[in-house]
Length: 408
Image (tube, rainbow, N blue to C red; front, side, top):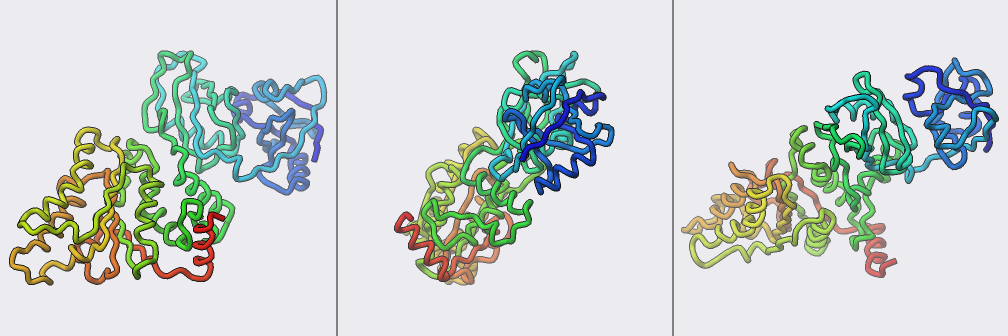
């Protein structure tokens, strides 16, 4: 669908800083009615631009700032042809990094303040790597150049770095350099869920499809685990500190034997890019000598403790998988052993997961067929707080399992 307009300059600074095209209100309505989509995007010479209505623009004209005219190779002396552009989910930016250079002398910029400005003034804009866009920061015009192509929206993670020419510029705050969520199976899933919610999809559409990683019939359960336990770990450490995000340290998978509990535990480590998971069966913790069982618990956490002391919240995530958890973590006082070993094992596990020196770089996945036997203290927040029942698959789940096995 093609439209023809007469280009004109932006007459005011605030219009130029909008980094979008302006149409007369009636022309804008005509275009929206024909294209049947809002926000309205037009493209000229392959360059996509957001369009907004502005009564001051004459009918038949399109107002463009100098940057847009240069980028789209549009002249003021002749009419220009524009094609409608229909955005799709693939066009939206998951993360974007801008290089920043002030046009006047400015040595300090608060990236958190700049983040709010960009979110407000650049929302729904289509960006091109290397192109120059302008915004106002405390009365100073900033030249900003993105490193990624696509549309910025409310879910886009934004970070900033000084442009090579701005050698004296100091950026502070929590949106400097590497604050964007990295590309991974988790971030792809999060992006899919976020876009589905924006577009008004139902709950079933927000489930994560994990068949591609070899799991069938457990989409709903894995989605629950993702929402509760994974999302906070996708953000950089300084944002976690700033907003006091609390990581989930324990997940309890329970259900009948053979339903996929161990498989899920192994795939969690693969998706989170953890260090090599430590997988242990409950009875393997037990030792014939008094005190050795508790020592075996401490050994499971030793590497994580070492990394935490050396690197703090920059350390990698350590995954500990404990099968047959009910064998060693029954309700304290329910056993009649004279040594009190079983109670001590529970106490030791509690201390390691949520004690005085609790760690932020661990995720413990426990599995059991008998949730009712587990000590109640282990099921509270800070311990195994996320409980997911892994039941027998339904007809659709069985079909997914078959496809996963056959690699179809």
